[in-house]
Image (cartoon, rainbow, N blue to C red):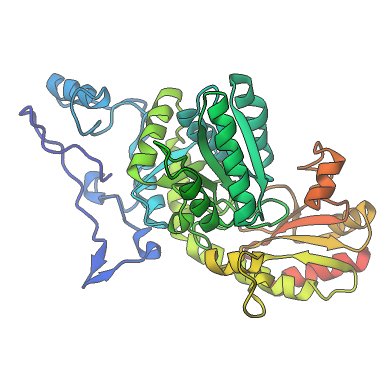
Length: 448
Ligand SMILES: *Cc1c(COP(=O)(O)O)cnc(C)c1O
C-alpha cells in the first residue's frame, strides 16, 4: 500500500502512511526474491497481521467531505497529481495495489496493473490506444484469443492489422512497418501499436525485440508519436526474458501461467513506464477489468516462490528434453534451450536472439513423435504423472495435442505453416522430480 494518501492538505486527520519497506540494505539493492515477502505492505496498518488480510469491500470510507472532494479533484484532473488513496473497488484495492507494487519489481518497471485475466489485460491495453482507421502491426502467430480480438473484434470497429512472422529479420520487419505506415497515412489512420508475442506458441519462434525497436525508431523517426511496442511475455517472463530492457514499452502477462503457477487462478498483468500505464489504468477504471482481492492475494503468495518454481521447472525441462531428443520414437524436440548450444550464431538467427534476449529456456516445449495422431494420442493416454490439459506454467506437468485441441479450428494450410502437425505434443514441465517425469515419458513412449 505505498500509494496511501499523504497528510490531507484540507486539514482533515491524515491517514496513517505505511512504513516504507527498504529497497536496499547496507548499500546492497535487494533482489526481487527478497522483496516479494514484504514490499508494499505494512503489517502495522492491519493489526500486525504478517500477511495482508483479503480486503473484501466494494467501497472505502472518506475521512471527511473535503477529503472526498479532494479525491475526485484528483480523479477528474481538476487537481494535478491524480487520485490518491482508495475509493471504490472497481478502481483498486489494497491487495491489488500490493500485487502491482511487487509485480513491477521483477522487471524494474515504474508502474504495473493487474487484470481479471491475461485477455482482460490485452483487451484493456488495446482499447486504451486504438481508434477507427488505426493499424495494429503484430508478430505471428499470436495466442488464439489475441488473434480473434485483433482480427474479428477490433476489426468490427475499423481497426486494421498487418503481421510479420515471429522469426522475421530486421529487413522483413522494416518492410512490414513501412507498408503499415504508408497504408495508415493513405486511410487517415495511424500505426497505433506494435504488438509482439515471444516465443510464439506453439512454434517457439523468438521475436527480435531489439530489431523491432530499431525498425520502429527508424521508420517513425519523423512521426509525431512513435507506436509503442507491446509484448506478451507470458512464456518466459519475468524470470527468463525482460523485454523492457530490449526496447519494449509495455509487457503483458497472463498471470494465470507461471506467475500464478499453481493452476488455480486466472489473472493478467501489465508493466511499463508510468506514461505507458496511465491511459491503461484510466481504461481499466472505466470498464472494470481489474482482478479481484482474492486472486490478488493468491498471486502475492505465488510471487513469493516464483523464482524457486520457475528455476526448478526450467531445470527439469532441460533434463527431460536432453533425454527425449535422442529417443528412437522421437522425431524432434522443439526446446529453446538447444539454441544455447554451440558457439557464435549468425547475427539475427534464432540462436542469436535467444542469447541476446533470454536468460533461460522456460519449461514449455514441443515434442514431435515419429508417426501421426494415433502415436501422439497413444503417448498422451499412457502418461501417468503428466496430466492431459491445456495451459502451462503450473507446478504440475501438463501435456496436450495442439492440432486436436487448442488449434483445432486453425485452417490446415496455416497449421502446416506453423508446424502444428498431428504428431505434435505440447508439454509444460512442472516442479516434480525430474527423474520421475523422465520415467513417465519413457514408459509412455514404450506404449506408442
Ligand atoms: C494463456 C495466455 C494468454 C491468455 O491469458 P488468460 O489468463 O487465459 O486470459 C495470453 N497469452 C499467452 C501467451 C497465454 O499463454
